[in-house]
Image (cartoon, rainbow, N blue to C red; front, side, top):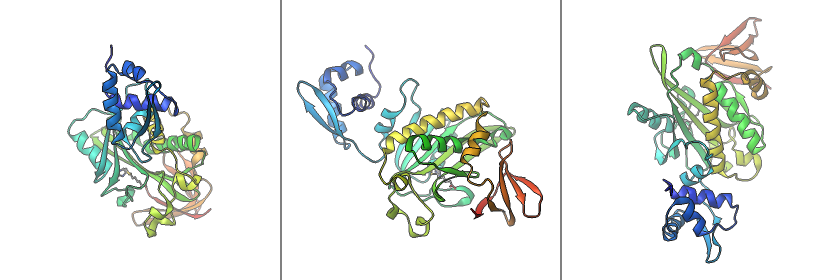
Length: 330
Ligand code: BTN
């Protein structure tokens, strides 16, 4: 008899699979390898965490209600079971999930691992910006990897991950987000999410990389501070209703891990097509700020290294690897 390591994940997974139907205590006991009394004890523990079950003597248990905010058991229960589950560290509050991942990497923690927090006290974005991180339905997640690749091979990592996320969100949520080079996920001109990739380089090797994602999933419009409300949106705002945040998070984790594995194998044949599909800048008049220098011109996609191609107003062509883009004319 195999004894399951985390019985509560298995219980929730079986009840979710039953789709509001009953699962007998005997069946749960058999799958998990404990007694029915043991199952009952776990159900009581789950009840204290916001799960509501109906228990009928001859039929077993069925799930009536589950927490609708992020919950580690629900994320794990929704992850694919055929592979070994990735290690997830779930926190109520942290300074920044990227910083937490960095500390754990420095302590030698095995990769890949994922840090998720309900809120951040010092969430950060690109170019030293603050990332609004209240506990109101947004996903704050970092995934740590040790890619062992040269820094030049990592150049289009963020772009590859961002188009993969766009495709995953488009397929699952039936909205069509796009990418504003290099790391902004937008929907109808408003910010839906952002990516912060941070890497540590040892001479010619990328020692480790942290892929940080902030995604507005179920944040209601009124939860945003006034200064960013007009520029921001969420998946629930776009759809007009909340989504299952735990299921979506599990799907995104699966996609991030899959996209990372493809990236490591240099299996990036689809990058240019995907970029064309999700690129929000192509053909638009933009302004790009690099330090104190401002370039203005028409964006024309990316080159093989992930640099943004610009046809400057002066007629010259330029490929840039860094900078802050503003769309001047749609
Ligand atoms: C940006 O748009 O500039 C990127 C924002 C990235 C925010 C996420 S939230 C999870 C992770 N932890 C952080 O401190 N930042 C990233």
